Picture 1 (cartoon, helix red, strand yellow):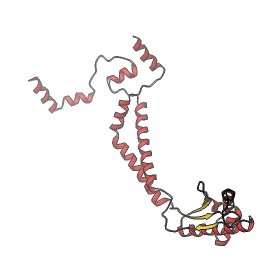
Picture 2: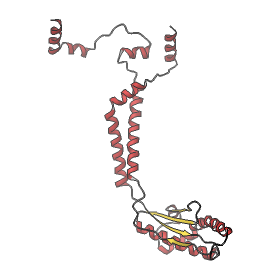
Picture 3: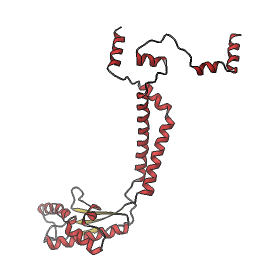
Picture 4: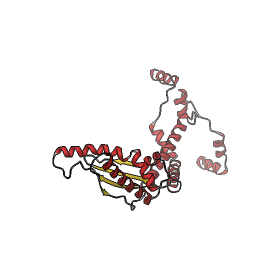
Length: 252
């Protein structure tokens, strides 16, 4: 009686018991739907990445920051060079430098548009400044990053009264596209499709309150079944000629 009361109270409170075994059974029953969903999403992602998104190329030039001396002679000079690196990052991406680059190369871009395509980084514990430019044309990306390096070095020398940074690497044109990453995006699309199909199947199963078996009667209504009546289809199956022969054979 106590168990029955607990079951009834759980149903009254709207609690839903989920059998993990039944969940895996439902997923297994719809395994081809899940696979097709994953393949469909992967195919859509692959198509979008290859045919609808313009590839972006990246070219990088590197500056080496020097302090105002011909050689490093003390720890103070090293620390001075490290602090100047942070200042130079602001200068390189600043409006004076980038607007000069736009004017020199006659670019059809605003300062904000060019700045969004430029990335300035300083690798940890170094005095290097990496100037990276992304553009659909790899040769154009190289031209822009080289011009930024040249203009920034000249600007620092004139405006900040410092030795100009040394350009130790010019941009390159032999790199492949950095965006989009077709392989990674395709795998992500397949995973999303798989998970979406699983969620839809499980939610549909949970929300389906149709009583199909005697066990469903006990689980959903808390009632014991005393017997079952065959559906019309089952009766018709038994009345088929083949079925009659089987029945007579068993009785014989």
